[in-house]
Length: 99
Image (cartoon, helix red, strand yellow):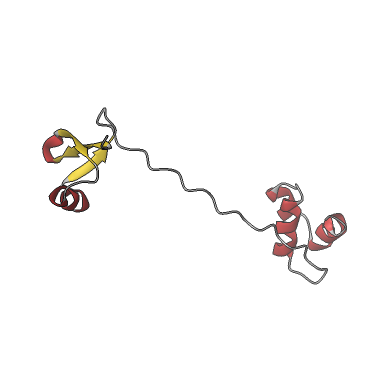
């Protein structure tokens, strides 16, 4: 059994076509004259991209910048605004022993 898909053409006309598309229809899709849609004519939802896994920040040393300590404090559960409001000395005192 052939797989089918729904397409909307210029002027809003709908077609159900077998996949893979014939050469002319594939060219029309590539050039935007045919758009693949849901059977009801609504736009196909693009699959959401998975967010890239972010590496956890490395624990800063005592000579690191305040920005590094703010990032570390936020990673340890402090609110961003709270961490930014603390002095560098307070950040080091509070979060140096955190792992």
